[in-house]
Image 1 (cartoon, one colour):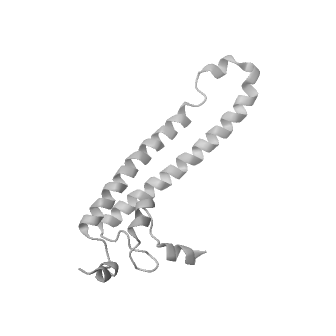
Image 2: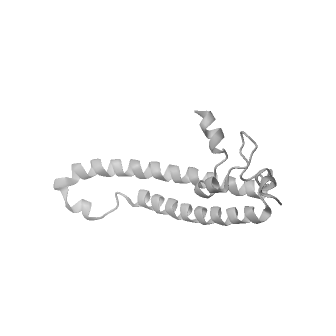
Image 3: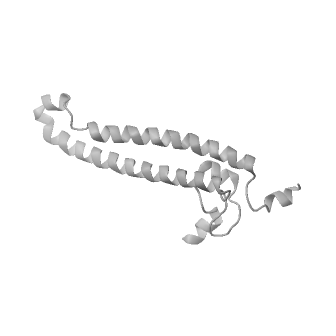
Length: 130
């Protein structure tokens, strides 16, 4: 196959899809661990620890804890969204539609997919959205 026909193919090969699948599964495993850690942090904040023994700083700590909980909650939400996008990418791999730009129908370059494995738009299509 010549370089020109390689560039013009309409989907990634099964071997390439398997490489992406492995990459996504690794990222998904890490993302789920991170989410569990964030969820655990949220559920354990406010438990009995040294905060109860230092009433002098309690007001300041409660304010900081509220901000920290809100921040952790936002991180957990972002992580859930990321997990959802990675799972959707795995479905696209199974359907053999992974890596195809949903706007242009062209293949998204491998470099972009390695950096953003859940991407559904090429850089060109992404720029046109703005």
